[in-house]
Length: 335
Ligand code: IMP
Ligand code: MG
View 1 (cartoon, rainbow, N blue to C red):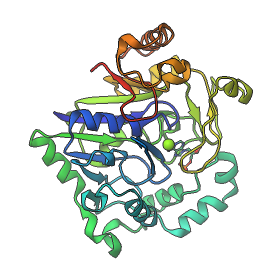
View 2: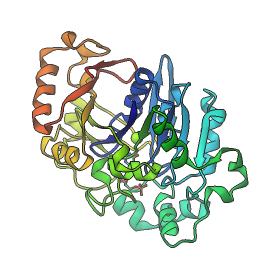
View 3: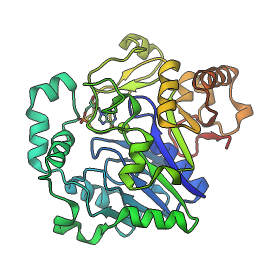
View 4: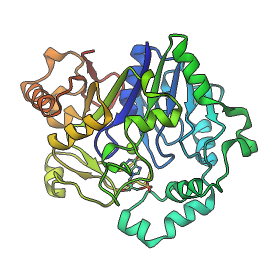
């Protein structure tokens, strides 16, 4: 039991949502709480024939027995939150709690994010108001969730609820957002998001101290991607990525993602700062379409097995979750 943190190891969009859904379905958490910046994040969750994009609600919502929480550090846009609650069903309205101290994104923050030429063009932000809202939080003039009447039914003390659950011996998942490469501290500054994105930050966002974390799962992608501007050492040309059949668009901004090759050196550094205990790798079906949907290690192709063992040597942490497609059951679980 205990507490597992799941974070992105590259530049975001590694498929964390899918890994969270799988770990939830197999390990039975009583709470899934999200950390991270705010609604700049987009997670796609595919379950059966249904596909959902979420930006505020934890992507583990698909696992109905768990309660869902938004941690103190996360910025909340009430409009985005209500849209998701109304759209995705799954009893989210009854299951969701929001920490009373979450800072609120207002329309003015969105306007600032979208109209500032430097943010919009040089950095290529998501235009969701997260940066300006974090500025206001630091200036100590931001609204908090407890000040918003419409949120009253959701308000709680998330750290208290999460720590009490861990102390009762229940299993809790802390879900990160964004990825290591766009951490405000460790990423490719200034082409980064507006907060640290590593496992320590995600735990802090939810109010869980380092001694209570048992597992840190870092999610990598066989072919990393990046949206927005900034350095991307292993980036390939558009033509190359099309030849490989890889075309991706962002969940939030619909921008085309830049595609790159596996970067072992970067992955190792990312796993180190995240304190990874376990690696999840997604997109193995991109490397070899024949493995799509495989759930048994022995049925993976030699090409994929060789890639996984090479990448595992690069990182120096066991690769235990091998994702073979976007669906929540398309995964080899070696844990
Ligand atoms: P901001 O977080 O909207 O300020 O954007 C800053 C940078 O982080 C931009 O390059 C965004 O594309 C990137 N970014 C922010 N959130 C995500 C995410 O969830 N996935 C991928 N990139 C993101
Ligand atoms: Mg995303």
